[in-house]
Length: 109
Image (cartoon, rainbow, N blue to C red):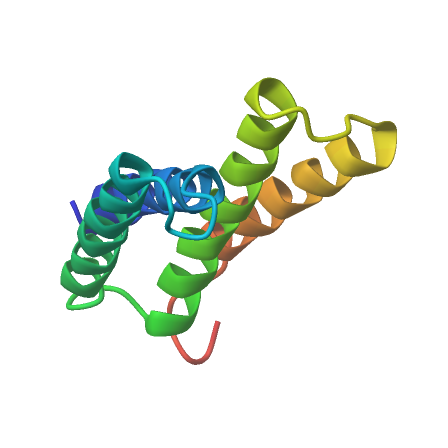
């Protein structure tokens, strides 16, 4: 269940980054409110998940989902440039997140 919380928190991280961009310096109030709500939900879910997960791995997965998700949304919906290097970089982020989850969780792994 803790990993589900981290994944959902990562999706909310993506949402708060996109909302922050669309808030245009906090001048667009609905987007600003969206940013505040999404950030609050994201941090709360991550905090809850950290009760059962190692902080380094959970935080890296959370930021990886947020970074990759934000880059994808940026290219898909916000007009960010699309290119081979950008897509390969997203693939590397996802591979890193998967690798962290496959790594042994014990200190002697």
